[in-house]
Length: 408
Ligand code: ADP
Ligand code: MG
Image (cartoon, rainbow, N blue to C red):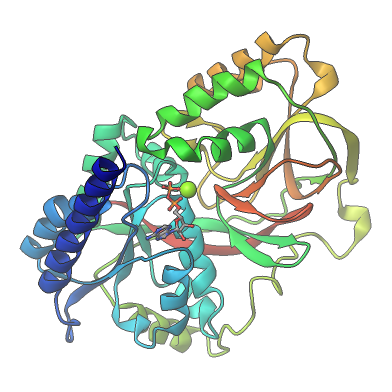
């Protein structure tokens, strides 16, 4: 049995190595002037573990035939993509980044870019494309849903390949949020979860080969085996302040990132040197103009805040959320508001139909900032699908955004 498993692991490893060397041997030398060029990150372990095959057989041939060059990084573990993006000197020569993984690698890439001194020049001028190889692709599904694409697995894959390999692809703005934990600061774009849904996400990691079905199975187990979590949730309801980001798009291959940055600097002589966290303050300096802060200390079943419409193909969590809009859609369930475990199962099923917000025990509010303090042991705080070690997390709207490949 042991020998069989080790043979199987060895052949999987050999397959990875063969595909990696095939991809690396075919990758193009960096583009010269007027060349279309992408920087590609492939996480061979994301989702069902097929991203190398997807790139080699479905993506690379189309990039080749459309004369789009690429430099490939096959990630070897957590923080590899982040470290490459922090250190890379010639980022400006690329037209975009292409990620074959889930939301987790997009989060890592963004936070890598944000650790650079030229972060804010790069961020809005180096768009990110995604091929759905992870088990959670909330960002991609939110973008495709906006353009009316059917979110079946096959259609998401086909459409994302069509978009990512097209010379006429457009990039669109997606709002960024500022996050502060006990020890770290991050930029985030998708979700903060704690309680039921965070447990389902993290405890089902061991079944990642099942793809999105892992969430359904763990959801069933968790609702039979319900937990409550003590916490303090503080939030400030959203107040519109005439902030209407332009829903503008640009063609990814019209200019390189450096050409866009140079053009911007001609139009705006003061360079963007501020950081995400200097500009997080979207609230008014006059407290009279603000909504009152709300504080709830109680036993929670679930707390999930999202900034995009979809957290997965079958999870249209905040139907009214817009890509570039900067409000946070906070929803939570208190232990004392549910009658039986059946209510919780109903909630999980209703998410798939986008009807969960209609359930009477689910509280929803649009906020511009929120803070969660965890007052009990043994729970996960999950940020954009990744576990964060902290007992306190604050999320605030910003006026910053990044760009994502969206349509052709
Ligand atoms: P998934 O949906 O499969 O979880 P994500 O992109 O959300 O995919 O998350 C992938 C995580 O795996 C990221 O945190 C990333 O840093 C990490 N990672 C990247 N490359 C590897 C690798 N070769 N082995 C293990 N983990 C990796
Ligand atoms: Mg993930």
